[in-house]
Length: 268
Ligand code: NAI
Ligand code: 15L
Image (cartoon, rainbow, N blue to C red; front, side, top):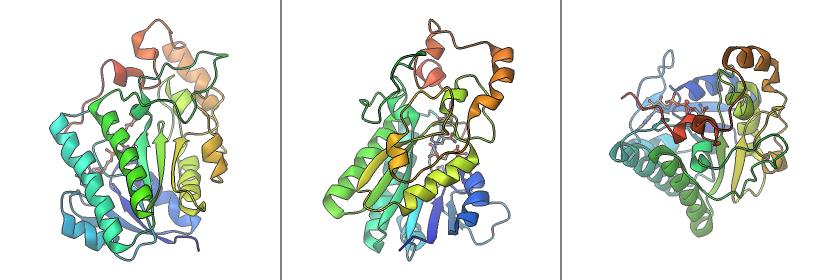
């Protein structure tokens, strides 16, 4: 039967806040987890992914987990190791111990960020494109996908790994026109990832059905994802402001954009 009680890690963050607003309308009851308090949510669990006891309690009795918590930009290897690599391992161990059957893992386009971005007329980036992380951050997402594969193959714990493009209320750059996932499509995609049957470990691209799409959404659609939005309505304004992407500019040459050249640094 469809999962109904879902643990949302990273609930205080940008994507967590958007999904807290949207997923209840898809029928989910959310339990919230973050290292910082979730504003206006006194029942949220405030704990670090390094706290194994807190994780065991947090996952106990849920039908599934959406795992968003972690460092979402580039940082030192040491910080990434603790939050994203050990933190994700700790979460999977807790889920295994408590019998949780399904995790939706927030991977990222930056796991394959050095993939050349397609020019108009080129084929879309396929879902089995080789890993080309663009940062330690992207490397940690690559690790998370492999961890998910291991826990499926060894333990039968299912994961949908979503290589999210850019999920924000609106696209704010010309690159984002190609990788944007509207919040409403994000909720549709998480719903599909939670309810599709027999996913094993499935990796999917996470974006809206954008006119300027760079990657293939076939696998996501095969899980029942039916995107409704297109960034093109924002294109005229963004292109007028910034110009079209320049294939000779290294900042614009890859899927990962400026993460390949000058990645934004996690401020904490
Ligand atoms: P965010 O940085 O706004 O939120 C991350 C949350 O995780 C924060 O609330 C932070 O307090 C929490 N967190 C960090 N380290 C933690 C730890 N050790 N223990 C417990 N909580 C911890 O990031 P955003 O944008 O909401 O992204 C959510 C997830 O989705 C991240 O894993 C990110 O890598 C991934 N993602 C997001 C994309 C986007 O477009 N927003 C694109 C691709 C991936
Ligand atoms: C990510 O993985 C980041 O977490 C998010 O903040 C955005 O920068 C996004 O990728 C992107 O590529 O736009």
